[in-house]
Length: 289
Image 1: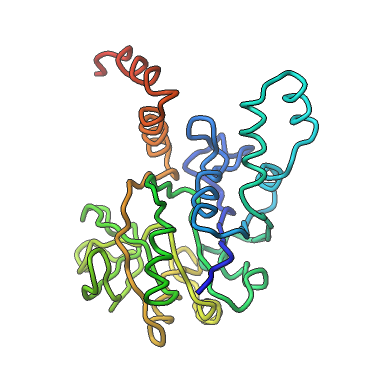
Image 2 (image 1 turned 135 degrees about the vertical axis):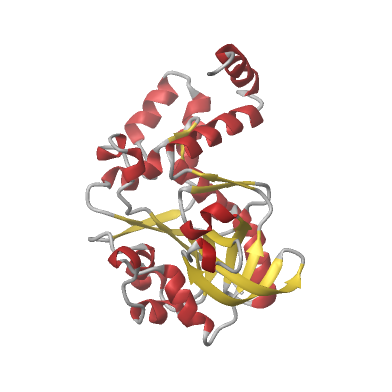
C-alpha cells in the first residue's frame, strides 16, 4: 500500500495567539528558526509522502508563499556567500510538492478535510495537524505508516492525557492488538470528564481511507456548529476497522503560547548549535517568583 498524499489543515484563526495572528498565520510562528508548518512538512517528507495539500483560508496567503522558491532572495544569499542560509531556504522549497485549497468558512476540522476531497481523490491519505509537533526519529507518521502496511489505512495517533483535560480531546476505547496498538471499539468527541471511560486521546496524525469523505458528507454539525472529524470516524467505524497507535515521541502543543515556548526551549536544548546558548540563557534567568 502506497500513500502519496498528506492533507494539512491550516485554515484556523489562531485565536489563542492574538493579536499576532491578525497578520501572521499561527502555522508560520517559529520554533527557533523554522515555522511549525515546516516541521510537520518535514515529518511528512521523511515518511516518503511527496504531495502535500494545505487547506488554508482567505487572508493566509503567506502560507502559500512560504514553500515557493524566492529567486531574488536566493541570488542575494549566493552573491553574499551566505551558503548555509541559502541551503536552509532551498530546503524548505524542495521538501514536497505543495498545493493549496481554500476553506472559505471556519466550519471545523472535518469540513477542512472534506475541502481537500477533490485534491486527494479516491485513495488513502494522511492528515497532519500543524500545531501538534512530535519530536522523534523516525517520525510519528513513519511509525503509523508501518502499522497501516500491516492493518490497512485506518490508523489514529493517540496518547494518554491527564484525566482533568480529557474533555478537550476525541477519546478512543479499544482492545489490545500488539504493543502500543489497539483495535478501536468506540470513539467519543470531547466527553465530559465524568463520562469518559478512557484517557487515550486522539492527537494530530491520521492515516485514513478515502471512505472517510462519504462519512464527512453525512456528518452533521456538532459542537460550535462545526463538522468534527471524530464524529465522521464514528461513522467510518461502522464499516471499517480503525486502530489506535500510541506513537513514540514527545508531543508539543504548538497551538498555545506556552506550548510553543516549551517546544522552542526543548528544541534549542536538543540542537548542538544552540544547546550551550540555551543553557546559558536559562541559567541567566535565575530564580523566578
